[in-house]
Image 1 (tube, one colour):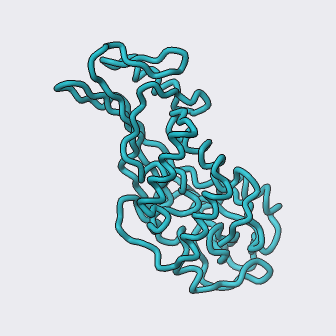
Image 2 (cartoon, rainbow, N blue to C red):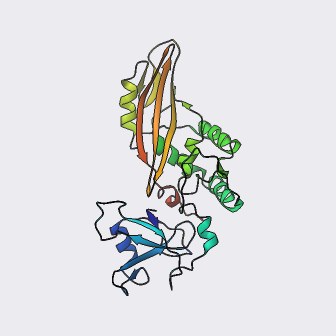
Image 3 (cartoon, rainbow, N blue to C red):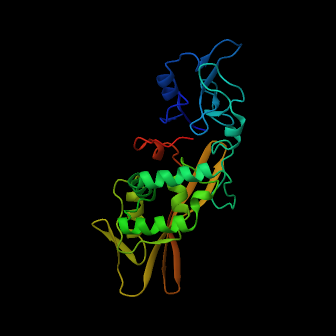
Length: 272
């Protein structure tokens, strides 16, 4: 995993970088343990509140996995008590790719996702716009919410509170972009705009997506190819243009799944 927190009673999480870890822990015990031959570095799992150990904090990161954290199977004094049941139910212990059919038996986790959606719809709304580069309207978002609920996306084990916006988008059928708008605050907005302007039947005017022909043509957006390999989690954005006897993928981009952003937008009260 590549996120951590400092205390079991806290909901504040941090991206795992050398700077963040040093800055947040102040290099103090119990996070830093120099009692053995080699230093050990600890924190708390952002999901299950078990202890985690930090690997490759200072060692060579060029081979194999770089800086990352793994669950530590023992309690750490003054930090966290190890709980096997919580570990086995942890979303970060064995993450899955979207598209699987595994559903949760633990209703607490599903209820947690429902609570987040109910309490922070604006945060979810803003996150999916930023991720996709598309300025979805509130009406479109409401339709997408209903589809997610109807599909029972909150039951799938691959979707958790850290990747919820991505899972939410992944569960949607392709979204027609005609007469929609780009989300100019997305890091992908300019690339998408260029792709649409270079397409065969569409253009962008004042951030609005328009056709440049009177006949039928469509632009559809969707997410595909979710991948989890070690601590690296990615997903692919795609836009396909279609018309009579024509279909072409005009934009595709693999992006990292940011497990930090959604959970740190707002003061969340939900906890594992």
